[in-house]
Image 1 (spheres, rainbow, N blue to C red):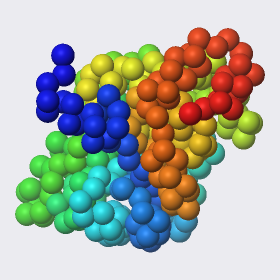
Image 2: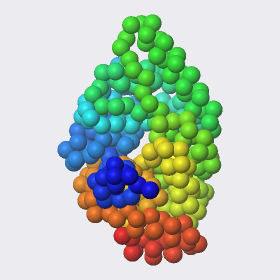
Image 3: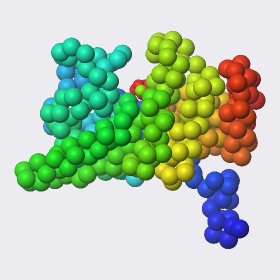
Image 4: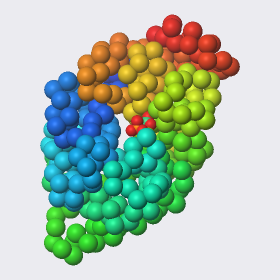
Length: 310
Ligand code: PEP
Ligand code: MG
């Protein structure tokens, strides 16, 4: 049974699950991190580093990347800043790309010099910036991608050490935004520090639709995929955040929390409303909602359940 200490923890957050809920921000630059801070974000849940390149024309060099990452880290001295490695390809083509770039981490591994440069920038920023940096890998579909990035991280830290440049190895996390990553979620959770659900891409990949189409996150197949990924992370004791647009939807937020998501990362302007939403949430009712939504067999059933979200 719960001892006195556990009872205190449960009381402090008003739930039996004990992990406090956080609302962080999705940003695309150091400057946007400042806005996120002003809006009361608890950290950065997703820094889309490819935006640095899409905004100017081309990938910024190692020094410029380092400055952008440090700017974000310095805004959140006591919090986590999750910086995603470049996610080019698909709807975010690299301006100077020669031919098709594979999406996400596969694209980084296919351009090893550029990937190594980004990892060096992240290691330098981790040492200089105030916040806690986690490097997040996009569009992971295979376990060996994580191993390959770790090898590159080893090499990056060796290079910086040899050059006498201050550096720190960041924690690693992965995006769960492909059906492959959902299947591999137990193994991924045992290899990395955190999972980030990308419901924008996960819904279209599960449903086989295009990204522009209605993402239909409330399709039962998507709801169940999300539930399985979160359960795998929870079983492994690894925190899981959601960074997709759905995190800012008040009803869907309840579903995510019900599954066990403990951090919602939303656009900076959506931070205050999302915080108010989570402040009032009853987590055991949210868990009951998640259970009912998992059993639902049509989108309209899920949608009506969400209309009565706690
Ligand atoms: C997602 O796919 O849900 C996600 C957060 O990543 P992005 O929108 O940058 O593809
Ligand atoms: Mg994505």
